[in-house]
Image (cartoon, rainbow, N blue to C red; front, side, top):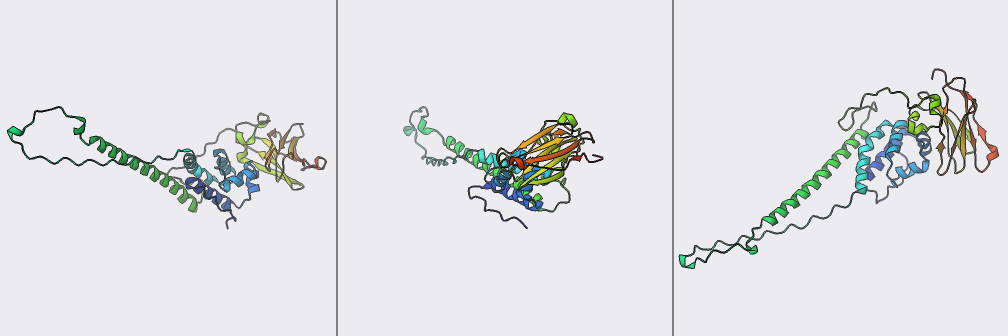
Length: 306
């Protein structure tokens, strides 16, 4: 059953409205709360609230993060996002100029007698043919045809996206928009072990195979210890927090990285080296209002075989 959503604002129309509805459908199917989606994607709960309620258009990076960590079908919304962005930024289509009427052709005079034939004179501007008016009329038709073609293409793309998302799918690699999903290519990690130290797990892509090794609570704050087997690196995170709250990941080798909430409800730290199975890892949460009441998770080693 879907969430009890607020009505989408009346000023959200067209592709932006359709995009908001599809995003809500993805969230409903996932069964996750805003807080859980925020924790998995590393975007704040407040940001997701704005995107799911149509207050802002979602960014392409956030849509990709949603696809990686929540639902692969979110990638199919990229064409709809592009249409919504172009619709939002495109100037209003000016009204077509009124089509000028063509003057009726003058009546054919009766044949003149030789005495009535006047001397030949050069043609004046008043004798010009109605060809310019006809050309303007043809231009107006071309304008209407072009506008209709653009509208038809937009409707086809939006309809194809909606039909795919509405139909049951057994695999996220099902055909979409008439194209085959590319065959996954195994590529080396963007960084590994000590090479990931101090780097962002989101921008490097290490978050793609992220595991949560353990969690704990500091009051209402939830702290996390994240680990990437592909990158052999770990990082800390926290949710349900407030500005000034922080979570720090520590290693037994003396390395540490801190996630500090500047605004919103959550954040994550940069990575630390976790390539050696003998390295111990833990995360400690510190609330800004009660810094002496911090809590740490149990110290863990990297999972065997990872």
